[in-house]
Amino acid sequence: MYTYKNEKNLKMTDLQDLFLALDWDSGNHPEKLTMAIHSSTSVFTAWDGDRLVGLVNVLSDGYMAAYIHYMLVRPECQGHGVGKRLLDMVDETYADVMHKVLVAYSHAVGFYERCGYHCADGTSPMFMTTLRV
Image (tube, rainbow, N blue to C red):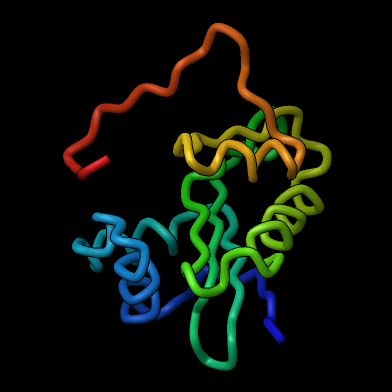
């Protein structure tokens, strides 16, 4: 049984542990990661007891766009509805926002499509980053 929260004041160790469990390079920069999460508009989390097992953060202007920057669920918790529930929390909170945008890795596109997202014709995600992608 998972517990879901709308909470962005997360501990650095919890964030780093989750990100590194998925081999996400952001976990190698825990101070900046923690500041980024704390600065997000919203952060929705999933917990198994006191262990952070899932997270989605949103950057939004509150009217036109809500950008889902991170969406992570620990590998052993995937396929149990955690990611779907986190996205439902985003959809409920940002129901009046016109665009909800995310960049999906190709292996996750099917999941996001089942959650109601689609690839926009003629668009390509673009990055300027110092992180591994």
